[in-house]
Length: 143
Length: 143
DNA sequence: ATCCGTTTTGCAAATGGTTTGCACTAAGAT
DNA sequence: ATCTTAGTGCAAACCATTTGCAAAACGGAT
Ligand SMILES: [Mn+2]
Ligand SMILES: [Mn+2]
Ligand SMILES: [Zn+2]
Ligand SMILES: [Zn+2]
Image (cartoon, rainbow over all chains, first blue to last red; front, top):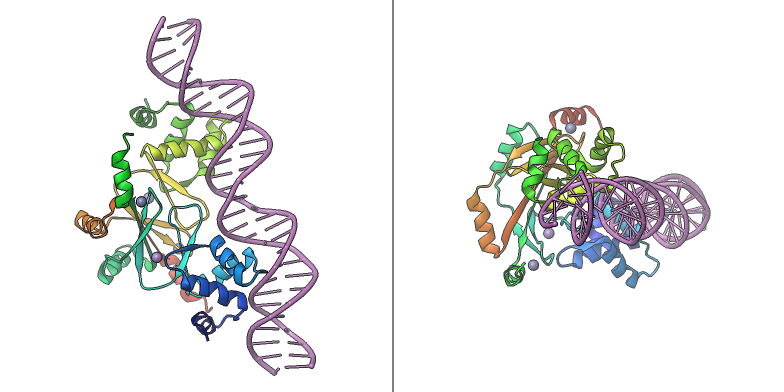
C-alpha cells in the first residue's frame, strides 16, 4: 500500500482513488505546489479528474492535518505535506522559496500565549526579501 | 493640513482628494480594515468614490510604504498604517485580532539572513489559535 | 489665473482562483 | 449483493481584485 493511502486510512475519511492520487502528488512534490498544478499532474494519471475534486480534497486533507496550505504572497495558495514547524523566505524578485527551521523555542511560544491569554495552535512566519541572484540583478540595474 | 495629506505630500505622489480621504480613513481605523469597508466609509464623504480607486490607492500607498496589507487568513486582505514591526494573533473562533511586538531581535534576523544568503526586507508572523471567550465555548460544547 | 502634459479617477466589464448545485458514481458497512 | 451515504464530474456561480478607456484633476510653468 502506497504511503498516501496509508495516511488517508489513518485519517478515517473515505479512501478514494482521487484523494490517494492527489495526496501522492503532494507527497512527491519537492517544495510547494498549487492546486492547478496538482490538477494538471493528476489528470495525466486520471483524465477525468476534476479541478473541484482537487479543491475539495485539499480542504479535507487540510482539515485532517495531512496537508498545509501556505500563502507565499502570490495570488494562489500553495500546498505541502504538513510536517514539523518550518517557515519560508520568499524572494520578491524571482519567487524562489527557501525553507528554514523555527527560530523560536517552545518557551517563547508559551510566553506569548500566556501574556496574551491566547491558545496558540498555529504559527506562520514568512520572510520576504531577495535571493543572491536577484540582489545581483538589482545592483546591476540603474533604476 | 491633515496628517494623511502630510504623509502623502512627503511621498511625492500626487495628492488627490481620494487618496487623502482613503489614507485618512485607514489612519483613523483602530485595527485592520478591508478595502470594501474603506470604500463604504469613503463614499459617505465622497459619494462618487469608486472601489477601483480604493484598490489603486491602496497599491500606491503600499508601494510608498505608508500602508501595509496583511493576510489574516480571511478571504480578503486587511490594511493598516505601516508602523514598527508588530505581528498578529488571529482567533479561529471569532476572528478577533491581537497585536504583539516582534519577539526576535535584530541579531536573529541577521543570522537568518546570513545563514541563507538572503536579504530580508519584510517579516510576517501570524499566530492562530483561540481567545479566552472562544476557548470557553469550545470547552462547553461537547462536540 | 491660465495652460498643458501627465497622472488619476469613475464606470463597467473582465479576470481568475476558488466554490457550489446537482445528478451520478463509488466507498464501505451489513 | 445490497444499501446508505459520502465523494465526484461538470458547468455555472462567486467574488475580491484588476483593467480599459474616456473624462477629470493635479501640479509645474507661464
Ligand atoms: Mn514549506
Ligand atoms: Mn496590525
Ligand atoms: Zn530571486
Ligand atoms: Zn475568539
